[in-house]
Length: 230
Image (cartoon, rainbow, N blue to C red; front, top):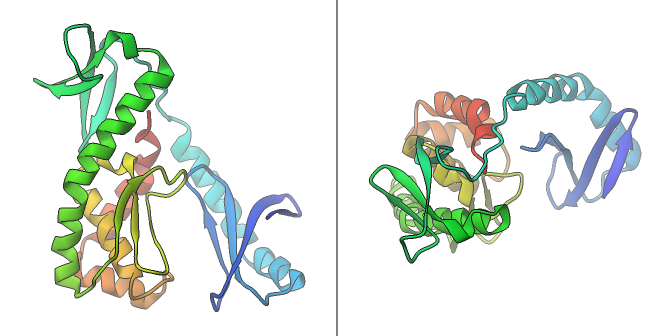
């Protein structure tokens, strides 16, 4: 539900959670999560208490996204995979629409227009994600004594990953643009949500047990996430 409090536009979502939370999404949108029974007056009071926090984080989001890269499907453009940038070459001499070969992304020239090129890159990242992420989930779930459900590589719009109430884990295909250690952080983050749904101290303690340098990885993702896009 779209709502506005003073000059703050936000999306309201109700669930069976016990407390209210406010998030700034990756696209700068404000999301307010509240218990089913919380009244409109209490929701307004929550936003008022967090108004300075919201302004501060929206300003930070604007700064981090000021240098967002607008990529074009032309020879020499750089595209990310596992934290490295690979130059693009257009070619007519290959069967697959897109390949990563000899240090270059090779894009078949009949796919150079944005809609088809976008689809080719998304398919590449999903394929690589399906090959890598389940193995890393298995590695960390064993260390954390957790048993996740299905693992999917999909388009999550404004989130890097999500954990459903039934224990299924979803990861954005854009995760495959990040360095391996950042992908591992995203995985550990979601596995910790199997035990702690909210970002409480207990949640971060769970992450810290497995990944003591998680703050460094979290900061990297916040500062560089805007550049992980097509």
